[in-house]
Image 1 (cartoon, rainbow, N blue to C red):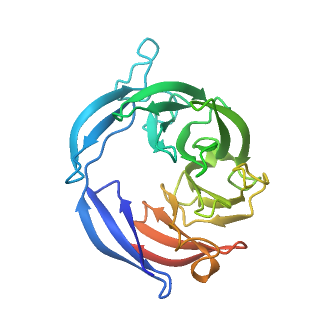
Image 2: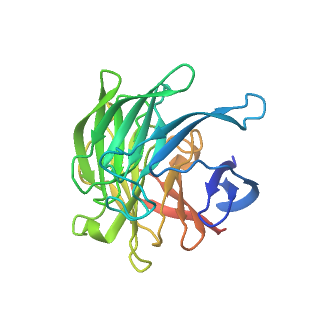
Length: 292
């Protein structure tokens, strides 16, 4: 069964549609479209979508992540992280009732309750466990009780429990690079849960082309907590400034599915590459790649 996924780029206004054939182990560009983006940084937006076309209909709310009495975003360097100084991601809870916003500069995860009209109300500003963490991406466990926060500057993934339906409480943290490596040489990139809910995938990238990044695999307990602090596998990437990772959806990607493996897409923006990796419960391997 051929699986399709979308890949955006930093240097073009395009979103590419890629087709991966697990039987033939091929990855090809099959189409592309012009995309509309909403910037992150100090602000965010809520757009109403046209129910017929699926396009943006109107902006119904603007979010401001900066405490204007303390910080001013002049377009220069604010907090740590250079251009990566503000909000970097927005992820809905599985039931669509909460929105999590990871903010590198504010070193926190914002939690919003989603109203019926899709507007947002802030219920929590959860400061990261370490002063230098810099939350980049957040992903919730499919069952909704636990949330995983990837820390760009410390190469950690922290696990938070959702309490009272609107706030987060820290439970555990794991290092996603080899134990003998310094996080000062890396930026953490992405964190995702496997469709089977058995594994947690996290990726990092080196600060320079000669420094390769890593893909880490962790075993999850049925509850969603991480079973062991030591990863089951660490796979060295080809390097580059962006090594984002995304598991293919079920049924293509479950260990009980096609060929008994999970498939994952991995990007390398510096080289313009997209790769497909496999995880069979024992080892991570590259099975296909294409250059955009």
